Length: 166
Image 1 (cartoon, rainbow, N blue to C red):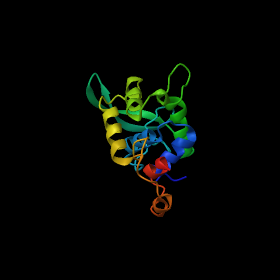
Image 2 (cartoon, rainbow, N blue to C red):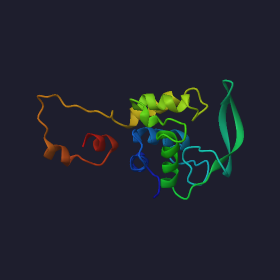
Image 3 (cartoon, helix red, strand yellow):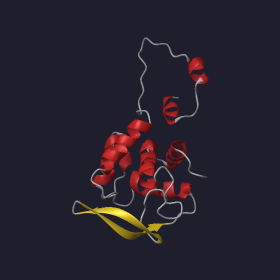
Image 4 (spheres, one colour):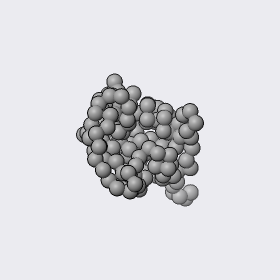
């Protein structure tokens, strides 16, 4: 599957078992420039390992540096998303995944606390991307407002916030 949108990644993340698929989509947006830059073959998340050598930015002792590092190669975007979700969102070995967080914002903070990224503003950047590109997980209509499903269905376009609402 070609990764061309927030929706593609959110769908793959949901299928892979991410509690907060919009967090995976935010990681994709931030790490790959909305899918335009990969760090290894089909690697949209800067996942390190044997594969393609590529220049990257890291933060060491609070200072931004540029290094050459090696990034995992994946057969497909689906495989890359599954790898990310299995190791960072779900519990894996002794690591407690961010699916354990009580909110997508807390999950973003857990990624940093548990060593996913060296950028001290990484969680803040993810939270900003999520707030601009997806609806909150819980949307409650006022009790007195009738739900007009036929009217709502006219405007349904399978956008992330609509999928969550439905």
